[in-house]
Amino acid sequence: MKNPALKVAFLYILFGILWILLSDMVVDWMFVERSTSTHAQTYKGWAFVLFSGLLFYFLIYREFKGKNETQLELAKQKDFSDAVLDTAGVFVAVFDSEERIVFTNETLEETLALKSKEISGKACSEVFANPDLAYWVKNISSKLADDEVENFYEADLETLSSTLHIRWALSNLRAGRRSMITSF
Image 1: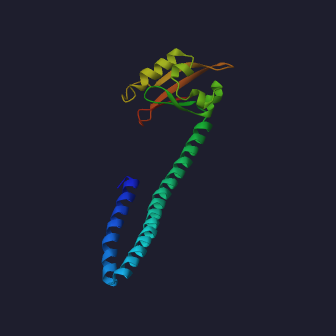
Image 2: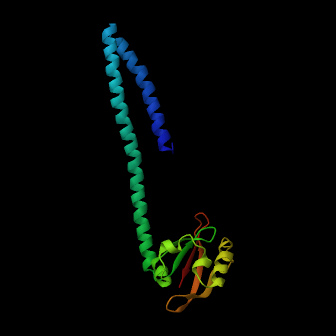
Image 3: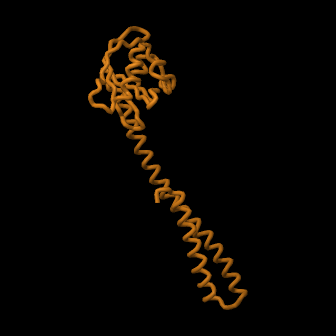
């Protein structure tokens, strides 16, 4: 089962049914007298609570341990990828299917003198002063599946201190139709 909550619930129900059926048979077999049978049923209930609690603990622990290890590994890979992108010496911006920026590297942020949270979620035309660049991103990102599309564009990038002439490359990341623009 892929759904861990459903798996835990199913195993609990199965455990409960088996416990009730088997433990009632054992109590009836072991205790013939009604008074001792009643006490045994009480102890059986306490044992059920204890064992089902332990079952829950181990099932949930196992599920969360695997997820935590996966999340830790993903965080390490993201940190590594971010470090590579930040030290690569190129500008990187990732756009979603609506041409809104979802990621920028430090090089681009430093050049534009903007922080990631100021850029994230904005359209290309809101961040880059060059309207031709914004039009190119919008036009080309929808056609990137076609291998014959020219995905390079030369444009000026206005910064606070100067104007940089940059050659941009647009690539399709294929994750939810995201595009990545890089410069060199």
